[in-house]
Image 1 (cartoon, rainbow, N blue to C red):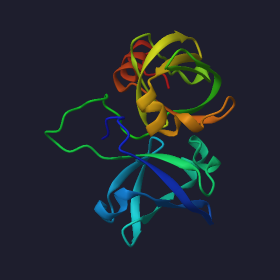
Image 2: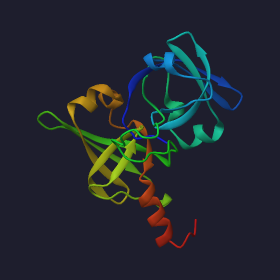
Image 3: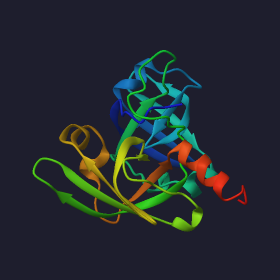
Image 4: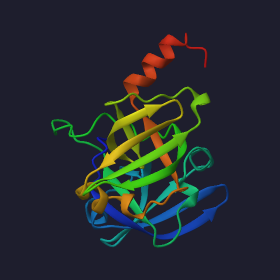
Length: 198
């Protein structure tokens, strides 16, 4: 369980194929505090720490299903990556309830600077049944955000300077693929309204 509040901006040190899996080596200040078998969200994808190298680098494994359903396969050496360790009981929930289970991939359709903040717009395949609502929560590459505008198959969010500088948002470009996790409450409501047909 996560909150969508990014702790650190890490860096991809190496990406290796291992059969159908992807081995991701990540460099971060968080490495010294991690333990084997701990869950860490990487651009919103919950992955298990499987190896730690000193106090700066660790390795996680993405299986074929994760590669197919997320944008993790787009990552390459030296790419920045949003990192968040799982939440602890009794801590403040500053973002919203995030599971680290990416629902689908979207892509950036526009970026507009607006006098000290940025409006990012994204599109996604609405036929998969996911929805957003204005002022509702959405997770983009692991970052908990509030939806500004919502349309079928698309939404926009406003990014403040702190978030822009301390997450991968300052590296995003129009056309880039992103990981989306929709609000868990919204997903349950949508499923109930559709009669659990999927």
